[in-house]
Length: 197
Image (tube, rainbow, N blue to C red; front, side, top):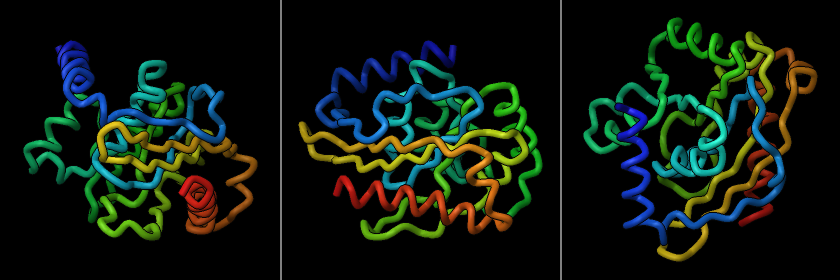
């Protein structure tokens, strides 16, 4: 039922909102996402998850990490319910989330996480990325795919999606401090942002 509802919603979006869903891939455009990967993107708008789905979701089942507070807001809750979501709480350890997400990655799944945790309303700079996805990657030996998204909310103007180079355990594992590893991934995404803006 959920899968059918998702397809119906996507068809409706394509019919009525397709001018807003035009996008251009840049960077590592030929890369096909591998099993056991964490997609890490800046969090720019509520459309980010939908653009990730357009790029990769038709090829792979992607679990999106969402703030549990979304369930308290009507429209975001409807959108999130159409995706396969793992919910986290800002002020709690989220042990259940880590266990579920690690299992998904270890079984060859794909998890998409926006490490800012919420939308940056000011269109300059990034908030410091949370480092929890580094822990997930370490526990499951997952690769990290850095992606930069710049949705253009003007009809007929293409949004920009910069696909980076996957980062393996050998590369992010050289940082003994997870915050430093997260800052490294963030610096890559910021570099991509400077290339397309």
